Image 1 (tube, rainbow, N blue to C red):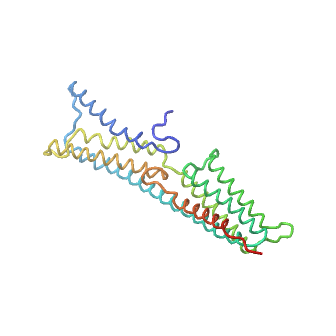
Image 2: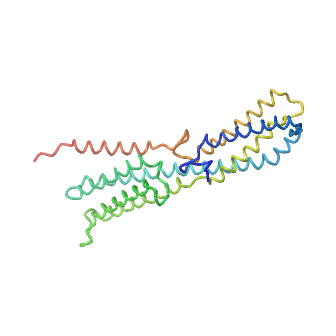
Length: 287
């Protein structure tokens, strides 16, 4: 079955919107054919008002609900994306204390920080493609990096003596920060994976076409002129197409003019790299 409305889990903006003017054009061509055979399909102007009263209400409710849904979804993804980078930044700040300690604990802190940096780079490069699917390579890779990070954390605990290499409260806080990062990542991916049902896009497209076509076969009032009717009809058509494009744009959070930015993640990566450079340049203490 051909998928007319979506591709690669994202809606095709112009691929579906183009159906609206296409069917309007087909309807006008059919009008010419019907007139040639003496068949009249135009309606008196008053029926346009009746049509808007019942079908326009249905169309308005459908568009409003879809706009509200995609806007709330985009806003939730944006919040979780910022929350995730904040969790990663707090974890990085805590790890900087480990790196500043003396002995083996400092080396462990540096190793954990390197793995955290790998995760930050992974998110920057793959946040658009991470979705909740069993065969999603990007998501699986990110999960493995966090598992590796958890494995590094285990080195802070000596399971034979049940003692920690760092203060126990501090180690507990590090594990808590890591768990928060994992939970936020999972919720973010879950939200990104939620898109408007494909069938709803089909319903919205058909409804938009049905809503627009009658305007091309009757005037708005019995006394309105051709120029005014044409201007109003064209305005309504562009408005419907524009609203449809907004819905598709908002439903794809990482592409288009309303896309979510990874600027905060890049700032975190820059901060980590600058700190690492300063640490390397720090002169060694004289004996």
